[in-house]
Image 1 (tube, rainbow, N blue to C red):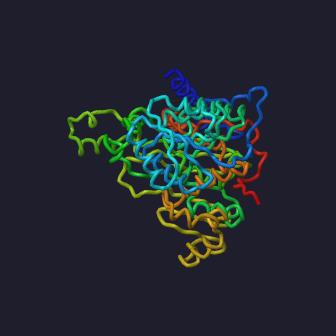
Image 2 (image 1 turned 120 degrees about the vertical axis):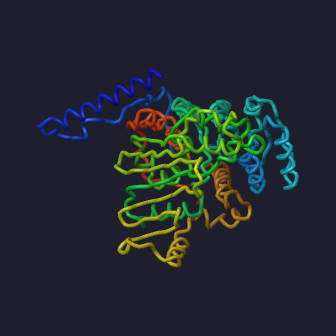
Length: 467
């Protein structure tokens, strides 16, 4: 509360300064100097003895022995997908709901894979992380456990992959970064949308200069989840996601929209996110839904949900690019991640209308035939390699399988992962930073530099291969 109060005072002083200048007959020298983004969380100095882990390579593994922590919707899918990757072997399964462990064991058996050790105690993950026969901790538990399990696992010498978000606070982001740098272990956030077929094709187009210089990008997570938020049987365990919507207002889940466009913009590989502004509507949808479903006098209808229905966050980069991210899980809107790239020579967008426009006739979309030819021509090499198998195995049309396939491929070949701990920290940091901006009437807030100055050492995102 003290922090928010002090930020409000800073914001008020900034507005007052602007007002004084606007009333003064004298012309201000540079208007951009009048009010700057507030540095709520300064970039922390790198501890002595640590170096960055950009392009980190680890000893190649002949086989990746995996422990899956959390076997709800995402965890069960992971069991299925890994069973189709011969270099991957699941050795441990953990969930506090015993029937989830049983379901996962049955899936392994039905797919001809060896049984794994099962765990059902709340802190079984600590015992699992200490096992000598585990190489990778794969976290599919609820949000609050992602960072604690990841940090502990790396401290035990394990590589880590976690469902999104990787962290909920800036402090957790720094814990992930410092632990990865100190232990030299891989830490990847499982952002599956980076591997969607359209996103990968447009990344390839961007890297080959088809759109010219990308100057603006948009992403979103627009997904009506009200039926799951309030479903005590089939929804989120212990209603954990609804609880987050009760307590917080901001971009609580920005990664699906942010991840693909961040890679197209080479974030921390030649550019960095510098500051953001974030605003939310008031909350309407959850209360109205609860009244309709449970009645006006129900407990759910009387709760005070903090999360506004729609959040919009705008990010400015060091190189002068902008990113807009939307978050809305409580409105009756068609699903959309937007995924839009706008450059000096062209434009691409997936939702609500999939289309590409290019100079010299960028005023109009390409015809569907021409667009499909272009998508085929620029099909990403990874999709060419494994796309058909991905469609058969499944997982959001195949992108989940490509994500897991690439993780295992890089670990077995000793290659840098497609996404690193800085991606995890940067994208997750938007959660707390947006909450601060929303609480202070859209005040600009600086984004820490988790690479600590190394963001310009690389010049492009690269998905490595052994060739």
